[in-house]
Length: 312
Image (tube, rainbow, N blue to C red; front, side):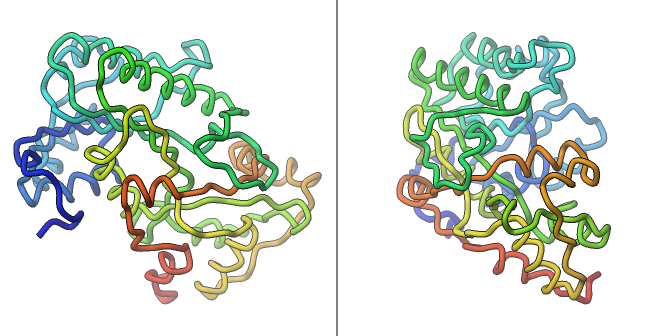
């Protein structure tokens, strides 16, 4: 019986290419490969990962998204594509653009096209909504270079759908967590004593368990609608400080210090400050109604509680 519910009979004949087969990609592959309903192919730039991928039933294809020869090898090999690789950092390109996804699309159109392409983006494309609820109809207002590159990638993906008929789905993904994911819980940050914003300055934060995200990726390959953006987020409604307070209580650790926003610049790294400068709450109606995903971990309280305090 499928872990994902009833899917079309032709599913058994599919070839799924995963680009960016890290933690989430591997979780998605594990939903596909063991049942042998699809041949799963993963592009990897790491020779060290080849054996590990084969051991879980994935066919590795060595290559790099910045290598034109590797991209040509991808043309026509898959009936469906799951793209989870990030854009380049931007140091050697126009910081607003993602040349990797553009090169991939150029390669894909050279031969038989996939039926569907699912692209893993970020909820950061919405920018700061000052705590308001946002849906997929909310216009993108990127505030960081990485968010701008994601907006460019989304536009390229949907261009492919309009120009060729490939069913393209963009998944807008917030913070990913899981107790069995490297750095996938707040424990290490709490142990470092990293402060959070005081209540009056705090921002809303959004989450998705890595297993639920992997399931959403697989479902989108078959159920995603044409040229659709989908927020993949759980039902948690928490500000960041409250999230860390909950985790501290769960792990039996001290709650983090609360500081004013004016003091944060002297105490926190720029990467963390950028997240504290954006506040929004994501609606997930489209994920539930169109992908028909039933969350296994509807809130972080349920997902984090699987990690027992004595593991510290």
